[in-house]
Image 1 (cartoon, rainbow, N blue to C red):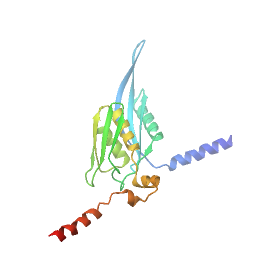
Image 2 (image 1 turned 45 degrees about the horizontal axis):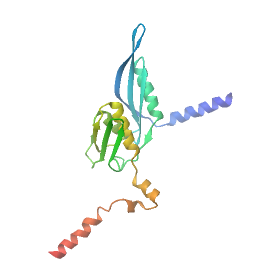
Image 3 (image 1 turned 135 degrees about the vertical axis):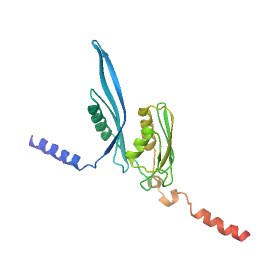
Image 4 (image 1 turned 60 degrees about the vertical axis):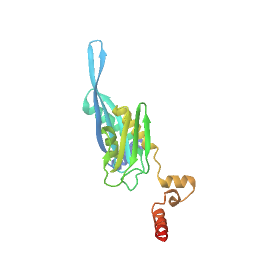
Length: 194
């Protein structure tokens, strides 16, 4: 019995040391259930949670009262978080698409200073993830549940150059495009012709 209490105590300590998460309420719906005496009303909440350093998750919860629905959704979101590698801690490594049901989203990398160009539910995901520059578009379903799931689906597909290089047995420099070398090589050729 004492051993079980010790385990609980250790688990409790681990939860206290976990990083603090920020959360964003995306949608709240009033739902009703028809019963013999009339209707019973409840609330459904959709919440996005993240540490703003590359981890994000979403959850949904239903309850008779709004605060309880939000609490349930937040707990679920913390349980199913994903980690996303960010380039320079501010944007995505490459362009990607995400799909879920009738929802389709397109996400593109953006230069510094662009900001978050995204619709409501997608903006919440990017802000909780810690992305500062991204251009995105939702095509198809405007349902916030489908939009968030499509966004998460797209983010799961992202791969960092380091991960690709490791998988292919190459160096990161071999994977990334050589941007500075090409213009420098062209410049002397033009002056030689003139």
